[in-house]
Length: 128
Image 1 (spheres, rainbow, N blue to C red):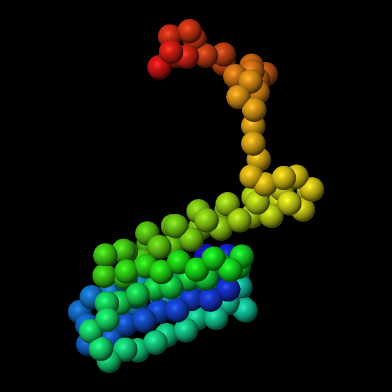
Image 2: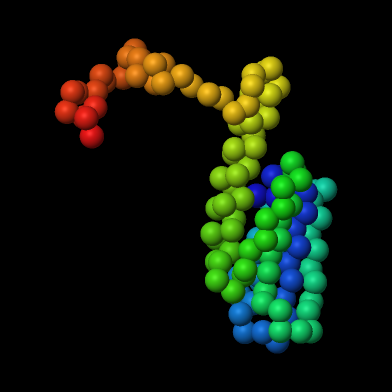
């Protein structure tokens, strides 16, 4: 998960009962496997003393930052989202390294062509 991130900032008040997601996400970030996947990823913890809701902010390796309200977003949901966006980043990088334009635009006529090894769509399926 951390291999797609350059920074993780976890903010919470230790006395707030809504910190479960923050604590679970912090544990995932501190796991050996996660740290080994990207040792240069900064994991920052800000312990708050006000009533600001628990928050997790991640910065992807491409500089895009995303903040999550940790009171309503489970740690596993955040992790899944990071992995999905990370796969998208890897695909984009692969195309750019190959000299291809991004995003890839597939002409409509190519989408409708028969591809060997696939079943052609029946007429009634095409109408739906």
